[in-house]
Amino acid sequence: MASPVPLSPEAFNRILPRFATVTTRDQITDLLLDFLGDGFERVIMFTHGRGEIRGRDARGEDLMVEAVMQIRIPASGPSLFSTVIEHRNPYFGPMRTDTAIDAAFAAALGGVQGNVLVVPVVLRGKVPLLVFASSARHPVDANSLHELTTTVGQAFERLIVASKARRK
Image 1 (cartoon, helix red, strand yellow):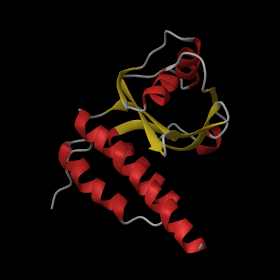
Image 2 (image 1 turned 60 degrees about the horizontal axis):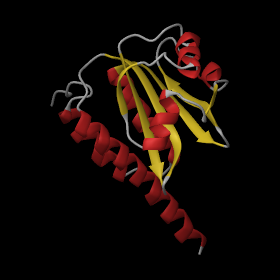
Image 3 (image 1 turned 90 degrees about the horizontal axis):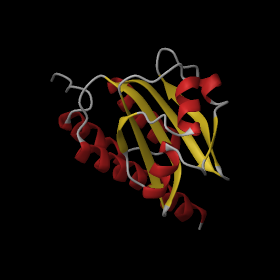
Image 4 (image 1 turned 180 degrees about the vertical axis):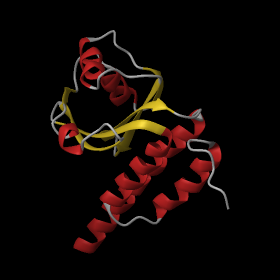
């Protein structure tokens, strides 16, 4: 069977059930990053906590994970990232550069072309992970993005519940 076009509803329909079978956090993040990496030129995963957003992992020919892990972005103050954290909804559209944080981030990447995607991973009302993707190679289905966000959060929640059950 031929692979579906990356980021198409068919591609989302194939990947979403796979999140129900993962057994580690790394499997969840790898599955998410690899899936988005098929449709975007750059994908960066960030952790969010203690007032900052920190680079954790990446996909993209011009990205080095070691360099990405040095990225620190303030979580407070106006930015695309703080807006996504506050509203807990994915953003897909042009990269904002109207705030100091967004302009500095875009400049650090050497510029950002095309539309960007910022996906919050919501877990127990908080956003511990964010995924940034830029330069979409294909159209992105907005409904599928929301479903992806929910499914990834549920996969993490399932691992937390299973871990707590093992400790009892």
